[in-house]
Image 1 (tube, rainbow, N blue to C red):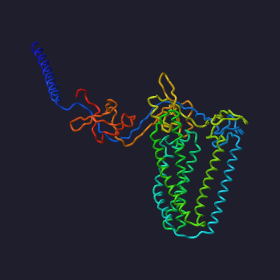
Image 2: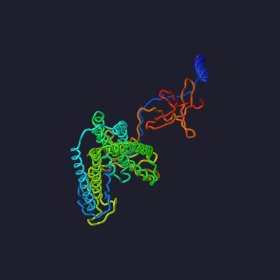
Image 3: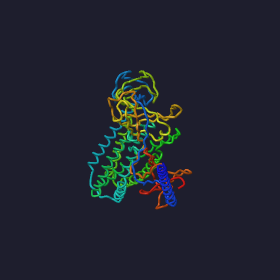
Image 4: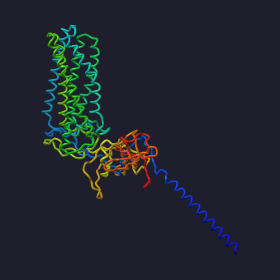
Amino acid sequence: MFRKTWQKIKKRKGVVLLLVLVGLAAGFFILQRGGSAPDYDFTVAERKNLAQEVIVTGSVKPAERVELAFERTGTVSRILTDVGERVRAGELLAQLDTKDAQTEVRNAEVQLEIARVNLEKTQLEYAQFLRGDTLNESLEDGLAILANFYDEYQTLLDDLDSIYFGTSLAGESENNIRYYADYTDKSAVASRLERMYETAETLYQQGFSEYQAAQRGTGEARQKAIQSGYALAVHTADMVKVGRDVIRSFQNEILVDSTVHSKQAAIDEHIASLTTHSATISGYVTDLLAVTTAINSQQDSQENYPLSIASQELTVRQREIDLQEAQDNLARYSIVAPMDAVLAKRDIRVGETVLANSSVLTIISEAEYEVEANVPEADIAKLQRGNSALLTLDAYGHDEVFQTTVTKVDPAEIVIEGVPTYKITLQFTKADPRIHSGMTANINIQSAKKDNVIALPQRALIREDGKKYVRVLRGEAIERVEVETGLQGSDGNIEILSGIEEGDKVIVFLQEGS
């Protein structure tokens, strides 16, 4: 009995001794850490690809109805389709009385023919008197001006291409000038600018080739180069003016609407660039005109022919533009189907007077579908027309991915269960027979993307008094650094624009009291 009791006591003493030793070790460890560095976690600032995504659920619906209207006020003369009938893209659906517009077209055709006859007559007369001659000082001045002009022109043309036909405002779905023009109901101007730009490229290639030839050619070649350069400068000045007028109309529209455009900085840059280009090209127009006038005054009547031909060539081009504008105006008296569709509604009769831009026909696509979704107000500012999106349909699981594009963002809110939301519409990029109305869509919209930027976890940020800071590990010291941030990625990282360099050690967790 005693022996058993003693064994129990020995076991208890062993346990107690073990506990004491563990306690002493823990205390020693704590005392040792009392003078060590604080507890923290850090990450190394590195370059990453960031994507900002908005994830919502929507449903597939038949493509939205398209309301069609005449662009002119007038009397309906023809209706070529009825409700329920299928129509093809480009098919004429209805037309107003076009007598006046057709008269304008015929007059423009006559004026163009007169200009061409006059040009041919002058060219024939000039061929009879053509002779070689040496260049005078004015011709040398003209070539010097052309040297500077062509040295700058390709850069100017590239900038106009970026301003007019880039996609910085609406994404890949629409170029900038059509975005400006459509907003102000001036779509014909966008088409005109596209033609003017193509003409400018042709004139530039022709003019620069003539300028190069003129440097080693005769007086006739040099004079022709100056004429072509002047024609190009005049055409370019007009092209810049037309574009700037469209953008200014757009700015006036959004001012009236009291709207702050999400791309205002880009719009302001476009206006500033066009203003600069206008001043530059106007200077060349003035200088080349002065040279042209000087050459004209120094030559006899026979030698006036080249200038006369250049002027008449400009007249022919202007008459061609006038004819195109008259034809564009005539087209505004007609309604043409913008796509293959079915006529769903008709609100006009022959003989009825209709107002411009009043909906008179409604068509519905018979083959394409779109997706509608409601986006919470916290995310709507991230989206814009042209954003690309991937979606899956519950009917086909998550392995079948469909590509779509945001085509519309409604400005008016829809309150759902007390929460403001905004309806967006997405268009499938390809027709697919598996898509049916009513299907549930799980949508992942890529609202923004930046590659190869310095990024940190958002939890590393400290926000105080409207500023943002991070804690940077410098050796054994911790330094507080103000930073400027950019895009917030959906993966929890945020772009760092300034304050942090690649490779910096940034604290993401610091134990309280350390």
